[in-house]
Length: 429
Image 1: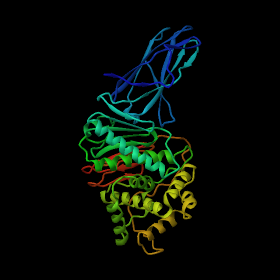
Image 2 (image 1 turned 90 degrees about the vertical axis):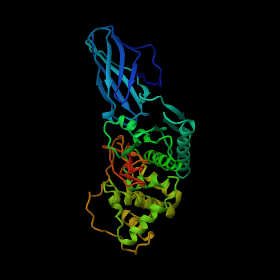
Image 3 (image 1 turned 90 degrees about the horizontal axis):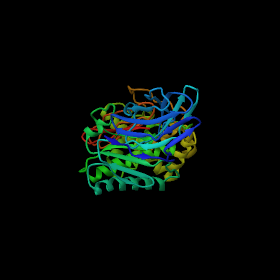
């Protein structure tokens, strides 16, 4: 059992007093992933304390959880409550703000100022490398291993910043598990092929990267996950439309450090053979068929590469900013390229060598493309799934998982599939 590390933005005095109600210092006992326990002594000079509620707000979530604490109705009870973070989809590395709301029998109510702690998996002694914009946690492997993760993430972040007008508001947190079993133990539920999860709205990605992982693999997985987190912060506002999966996945794949020759060739071959899947079908989930998922990831990369080659870094930066300002995809493309989505698909098809005016519409059995809907409130993005060495991205409202073939790189909507022996990673906001 370990006591959670506290990150208090405003240190509390030994006791907080509001009228007749006093709130003492909180003790947090961390047994994550099983539970996190909170204990505090409260008091009322006016009457017996009737109720004590713990209020929890997770970064990236605009909702506040209220947990009723156990407390004997006396003038000076000790209140305690346990929270199981896994059903709420809360990964390690996420800041959580808590406060106490106390009511006494005389009708007095007091809510304490919020304090913040960072969720930590208590099973391991974590090592950390932290800067202003990035934090890396790992527990197995030497300093050189941790530095390789940090450096890959830092170079990827610098590259995206230089190529765009966007930046991050929240520090990106990368949590590294050394094996699948340890990673799965921190999840409420995880399928065996999932090798990681990204939570863009929380600015956290949780990955399985063993200390003996090849450098080339790290230089794909880590930049890809950093790109998902950066993309979310670059495009998301309370009123923005959700960008299509092909743009998110393609952006993340484009910023990997390795060559993309294989994926780009796959798309050109599919176009030449009449097997290209219309890009409109890559707006949401990529499905579960391995060949389809592999092709849609490659098509996503190809479409984003087309944007960069046709309109440059400034064009992509303008596209992200237009989405951030609330434009839907048609409006954003028109502003940047002069083409609506259908015109963009046609231009991309011709760039691939297709016949002008003959964009393919092969019969396809599968879900209808997602219709973008405005997001009136800032809601967290659920986890998404990617085969190792890739990771999941979690987007609201539920996690999306997808299997991939060996060595395939894919994202499903908000989810991404990476491959280490046909396993992937998952995305969540």
